[in-house]
Image (cartoon, rainbow, N blue to C red; front, side, top):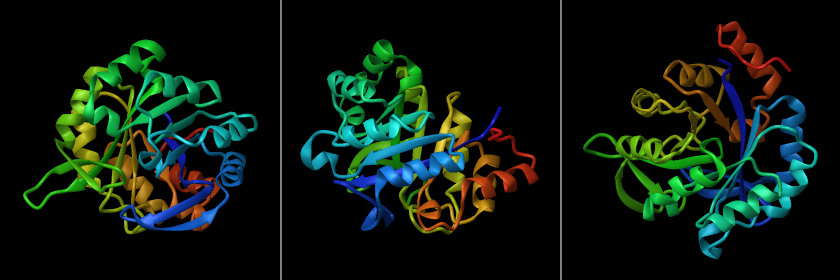
Length: 251
């Protein structure tokens, strides 16, 4: 099975942004143009997250997704502010292939089942923002790590798979934007307990970080800062993964 390399694009209004531990965002460019660049470089998928959707209680990425989907022929996942089947339909209609649900699912887990039953498990992604706890383990957070849910990440991941989620988007708040390596214990702990793909994000600074994430159970790796700063490119990363005997899609 090929490991997927995914470009993660966090968007605030019309700007591509990136922070550290989901705070202190700074502008990184145009989210549509960057997506087209990553597609041209060989990204397996594109992931768009509306980071201020909770403020507006709706996802505001339809125009960007429509533009990118017309020119980029890889799967597109969209997350942020998705609370109803109608909002899912709106995003799928403009070109998204999957939706990532976080806050609404923590409040009403049955939404995952409803999306899966209506559009298929392949279109249903649970987004988990994981924060390590002093006593051990991780808590699932919402609103870019600002709000506690009281949910244990491992148990929540297992429940989501049972409810029909076809993938997990596992974001480490502690490692996000640090470029100091991924939370390997988190990736390993979740991957061992679910039989659906885990997309791991947070902390990638170099190719070896991706390799370690894969070796600890990730089916796909989401990359943000390393791409936006041109520290990594998809062609170089693919070459490094092949050297490490990790299967990636031929481009």
